[in-house]
Image 1 (cartoon, helix red, strand yellow):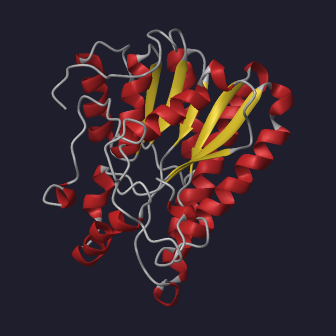
Image 2: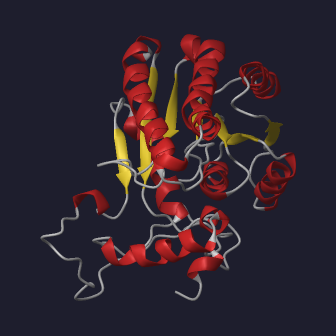
Length: 296
């Protein structure tokens, strides 16, 4: 996009005076969400493994006129490091109103080839790490003050062939979301999840060529016949963090173009006509299409 500021559908100042911790904030969906939150007035604490990426996003937010963001390098699989990072964010900002539990990662592989080490690495990142960050946000601030948490999972419905380790971890995170929503409700903490499907995000470029070839063919099986945008995921997260979602907790919002509803008995068809109801929304002024999709 050529705009100079985030084009959010939400009212200006929606998160003014609030602090939100975004893990995996240095790239992809985390970067986009951090930008939208900052554009709406939130002070964002960016967490992730690579400090250079976090600092670049913080600089982008500053250049766009957002409140100064802080950077917190951390490996979310390290319990002590997570505890220290949440404490550092609180020491810097004095409060923690929201958590976007976005950090994660996986690699494509059939189950029979995944080693225990590989399985553990993905599960620790996508399940244990997310649990640790949420637990510390709750223990150190939200238990006494309330707050909202949004966990990132994925399109796990009907299994996740080719990424069984990630599917198992994300399914666990969904159950954790439902459990925490119940246990932490008395403290005024809402816990929800989002499940993106195939999103045109920078993460697509990290896969090898064989996986990229498969990904390019996926559009044809999406009922809406396209990939989603980072902004469409971010907008859902922002809504769940907002006051408008005050009676929503323990749920998961799918952002997948209807893929889990597709059936072999109903072939996907190109749209018969253009419709604003399903046209892509892209409010992120710094969005860039993944290289693998530019010639698609």
